[in-house]
Amino acid sequence: MAAQPARPDVRSRTRMGVEPLLWILGALAVGAAALTIVVRVQDRSGHVPPSSMFAAAGIVLSLIAMLAVTAATYRVGVPLRAAIAFGAGFAAIAIAKFGFGATALFQGNRREDIQNVGGLTSGGMIVVIGVAVGLLYVAAVWLLAVSLRPAPPPDGPGLKPLLALLVVGGVAAAVTAFFATTAALQYIVFAMTGLEATGIAVALFVAATLVALAFNDTARRARAVGTVSMYVTVAWVAIAFVLVFHVLWIVFLLAVVALWPLRSVTPK
Amino acid sequence: MSSRRPRLLARMVRPRAAFTMWTFMIIGLARHAGPTISLDLVAATIALLASYAVATSVNDIADVEIDRANGLRDASRPLVTGAATAGDLRWTATMAAGAAAVASLPLGPAGVAVIGLCLAVDVAYSAAPIRFSRRWTLAPIVLTAAYVALPYWLGIVVAHDRWRSVDELLLCGLCVLFFARIILKDVRDRLGDAAHGRSTLLLRLGKRPTCALSVAGALAGCAIITLAIAPPPAIAVAIALDTAAIVWMLLRLRREVDLRGELIAIGAAARAGNAVLITVVAWLLLSAQDAPGAQASMLVGVLTVVSAVSFLALARHPERARIAYKA
Image (cartoon, each protein chain N blue to C red):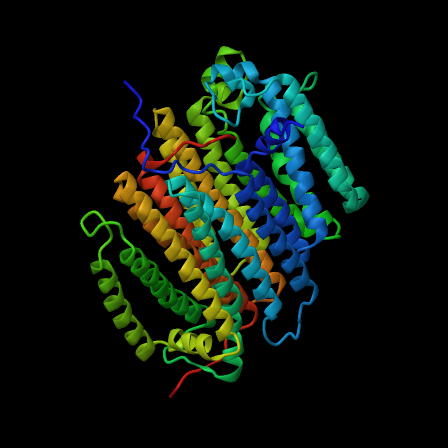
């Protein structure tokens, strides 16, 4: 069978050359240097988990995310620039979640106890927070994917799953807050009002911009080659990574609260 | 300079198996020092990975004909595919041995001794005149020592501690569990092994007795590990669930006649075995920091759920699996 002729209107997929590799190596070097500094200036007060630990976790996870997400999305078939944008976007999410977010939780909890109607353990509250915030992240990624889609349903991603997710998530959040704990809502308030709020806002803005850029590049390529399925696959890969990040976050914070439990009150 | 040989060296560190060895080192470290990240840990990791590259290089040279007969023509067998020559692999073995020796220096005399033993076992396992790999009774025992006991000992060295009586029971359990796993490694290669007259436990005893031995080893290993680490009841239940998953897969292996199905059953059992190891690491790290049992149980519960999802995905949908079994 004859080979398919090359498409002159579609840029061939860029191979991983020296320049992108240098960028990735540069990012790894900066991350390693930052990690070394953070570990050297550890604050070990003993009563709350050291912020340096969260900073170190954020840096390590962002480096892993950079490599893993770039490799995974590149393998699916997106252009190299989009794959690197996905990787960098998820690196920013890792810094927001594992670095700033976790710090905000414990700093906020120092000022204000968590309302714990159902008498959950610290671990239980972490699971509630992780699930609720995870749903928000999934909704955000799906919203970006829908906004920049190359084709409407049934080929491209639709809004219906997002609406269903928001309705189910909203009801679950309300029921949980009423009968179990307000941990998820309070975490969001801590993340938006504390000292770490600026860091979280910047990191999430960078993440959203990069992920949007990546979806845009992917959509353009999908339109050019006429395979919308590639775009949908990339959207699912992004959501899979969001879920993996949240499971990791839950596991990490469960280990942390085993040593430094959250302060909570059970109203009579 | 051509980057072919350095890339080959990196390829000879087969990540899955190397990670298993590293886990046993972390268990040794966690048992003696709790959560510890140090330059010694980095040095020990490099030394361990390099020593494993020596083992794979020497083994690939020694068993090239058997590997060819078994049709192992993927990127992890460069000698079989023709991507590398025996000279290339001798180079990777020499370089990796040098790297292991240099990396072990910061660990002091004990670290140098452990890595020296690792290298000696790596060579003796595959190369003449000893060739443990051709002695069906000794091969799994030597592999257990190389994969479990020596890395565990290296973990103690990284912790700057010495052997204690609490290590005996835990290491015994880990070795028995690993032995149950490693005696199944020859399932994939039995045709080539038989054709080349290589005697293995599987060929000597047959599949059913080997599976029975593996089930007994898994049950005994997990029970001994549970006794050794004395976890809270919820964590003991998590280990029991993992053990049940291993036994389920071994029983499936016993019935399976298709090679692909056999390999998937072994892979799924190994995945459940990894869950046991992760549970042990989690509990040792948290208990070393005096974490309450309830909180540690919650963490292990989440880890067990994640492992169960991964295990059930493989066990219930074997048709979706991609065979990447390299042990």
